[in-house]
Length: 198
Ligand SMILES: Nc1nc2c(ncn2[C@@H]2O[C@H](COP(=O)(O)OP(=O)(O)OP(=O)(O)O)[C@@H](O)[C@H]2O)c(=O)[nH]1
Ligand SMILES: [Mg+2]
Image (cartoon, rainbow, N blue to C red):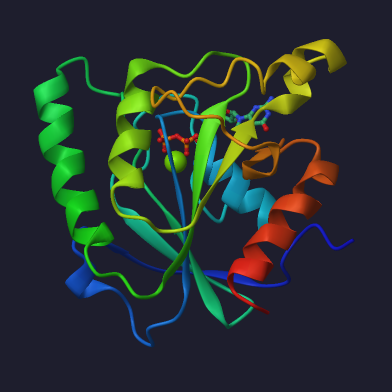
């Protein structure tokens, strides 16, 4: 199974969907809490070290960053929520960016919603999950940093996955990933490819 894409190139950064790059192509969005590993996952899937900038300090990515993959579609990296201690500032900032991005975005084929596998979902995670479900785009949940878990911790992930809606999240909505251990990325790539019907 191929784990990575072949080519990847940074295209542009935007804050409003009306500025999305030409040509308009299908898009895969990566969202999740600050520091959860969005940029790292993009790099790992694209088999590059520093395509999307990663950082130990949360709040690194502040715009929607478009990367063209295999000359045929875009990965979109996004700013992580839960960074500012002042929630109202956070809500205004993310509200503007994501409301525009999620409104009538016909090119958005899949949302990859990232959660840190080492922790229970936070209030911010639950709030964002509920918000993104309003828009009814297809999504999957990628648990990140699974290289840090042992087998029994991995098995518990499904049980502990409370995203605040009292719903049962089916196992095939959830993919265990690690940007360090790329073996796990084949399944995610498969899901992305089928969302793009490639
Ligand atoms: N062990 C391990 N560390 C990871 C993994 N993915 C990311 N990290 C580390 O987590 C930190 C944050 O990673 P980023 O990819 O910058 O996170 P981000 O979600 O893009 O963060 P923001 O842009 O601030 O929202 C970095 O120190 C990464 O090296 C992983 O799969 N395993
Ligand atoms: Mg980032």
